[in-house]
Image (cartoon, rainbow, N blue to C red):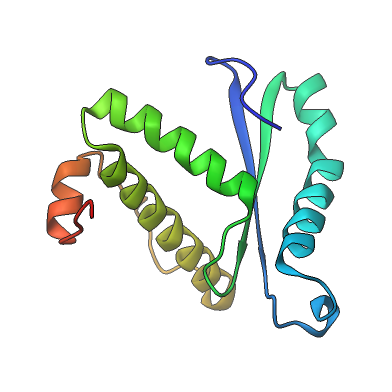
Length: 140
């Protein structure tokens, strides 16, 4: 459920739920997040720990832009590591990471709807300072 070892393989599984779905109408947001996280943990957690010797963290988001508590903790932890390694302010790293996650989820959705048209892989932009300044994101 959390990072066991600094050098262990981290495995994340993303689940996006719609809080407006009829099947979730009776659940509070806390219950919705808890149920989604637990279902992913039941599916993968034991195998990841015992077979792959890694750390498993489910990332649960809503279609309205919310994030489950565990997802928020993971993002904060990763942002802290990125800010330390890249030498940028933690708020910039957090904003950059959330933006990258949002676009990755959007790309995945589009791929599911229309398929891929790209023949070359997308190159990652590792310059956080440049990405933040181009996006005109401020730490406050």
